[in-house]
Image (cartoon, rainbow, N blue to C red; front, side, top):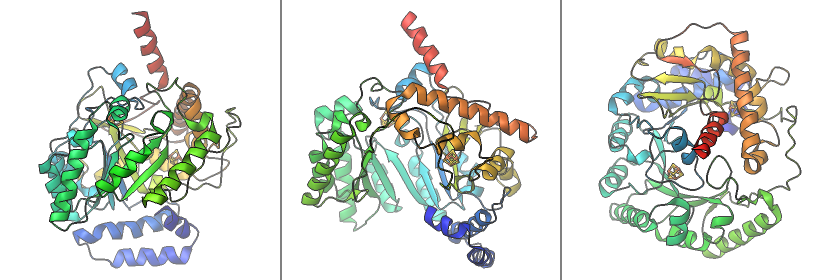
Length: 447
Ligand code: SF4
Ligand code: SF4
């Protein structure tokens, strides 16, 4: 969809046509999402700061806990900081409260943070309600260990769209070591889903595997591919493992350290997939580029890189130390607000605008694609060395990010005046600041 927005970005005629089509389209529940896309196109083209279109893609963490402790996951950092983390398990009332803008979204994705969405006991109810009423495209990122028969039947009956299964190893030992669960249970669940889909002649939900390649799972790919065939997996997404605050951070498992070896392995993997007729994504290997330096120059950013997320996306992410709350942002780089979702209603455009057209969003829309006035977090995000730094120096990466986040909020407060709103707190720093983690780590080692 980003390509579509890029085409419309500089084309006034197309944008006016989209606006007229959007205005003429009837307000039938199932059509609302298309009308909203057309309105968004027009907002982006006009580079509007206050917009009447709603987000196209919404992401919600439906719960804040996980039944796994994968080695590569930031769950270890979260558990250290918040040993008694809040569950924040949302229910159908939550969905009703957000229905005004959920009803116009094209995509609704359930994931975010170190949590397993299918642990939410209401998950099947969300799917039934939203699919029946709005036909929204839905995706969940899951370890699939909780995909029981009842839930599989609901997902099939309501044509839930995509299950992206974290499947970073396929051997019993490899899976247990890396993901800490039982691969047999996951396989059993996927097998039931496949058989039921076949029995009912249904194509959905489509299942995809997510395979983040690194040294510890480099030998797992033949079995991952074999199982993908066995369970009718539509594609295996080959990701390059990326670092972070996890149990592997000091083990140099990323191929960023030896790009030549990583790229040779990618060639092997793609050749094997071709031979076995496995559909990989991306279609061609996305090679590591040679690690030159992780020296950080703030001005080394790609100004031509356009981003439209402030007009199109909205994320509701886990808050681990407070009940009935979410952090809210529009991308993975920064949380903008903390929301107490039991203290605020978003049932009308006016109520929703308090969030969606808040000064923080206006500031982002105004400065995300500029050069001289680009805001600190987008400048950091577009830096050419950011991804490499993330993979090879978790601490430096986090420090630079946290300063960029802080500077974003300082600039926001310097440039805009905004009132306090009950239930919406504008943040001042990264709530998951790395310094908090380092302090907690130090305290733990001193005890
Ligand atoms: S299953 Fe996902 S959220 Fe849970 S520990 Fe593993 S990576 Fe983290
Ligand atoms: S930080 Fe800015 S450029 Fe990066 S994804 Fe977020 S909005 Fe887009």
